[in-house]
Amino acid sequence: MTTATATRNPEMLSVSTLIGDDVFNREGEKLGEIKELMVDPQTGHVGYAVLSFGGFLGMGDKLFAIPFEALQLDAERHAFRLDVPKERLKNAPGFDKDNWPKTADRTWGNEIHSYYGVTPYWERSNVRNTQTTGTTTRV
Image (cartoon, rainbow, N blue to C red; front, side):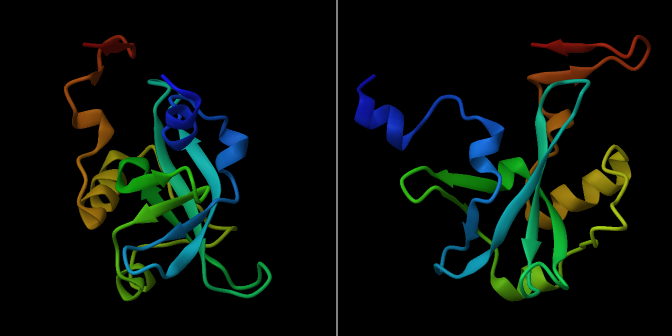
């Protein structure tokens, strides 16, 4: 792989390089920025990016857990794209910095994934949790 290709489409990224990245929609409107990445410790999978939207200078921001699969990396812009109109994001299930959702709750997770139109990572065939042992198997 050439350096130019690796720069445009990196195979691995440091989490710290993603925190603070802007998120734009297809129309080019800025939707917010990545504040956190939530990792499932059972699978090592990045489940959600926490997007900060609205507010001014960090005051009054609304936070959204965006399924990581709903985001497309734009490495050249050091940003992500989320194919959601700004109005839909304004009406999305969100939370504030003092009242985080129970992100391990699969009912909540199914609702969030459904809202953004992506299949939950735990339902895909390449990651499977074994209920009886609590282990994770990759197939």
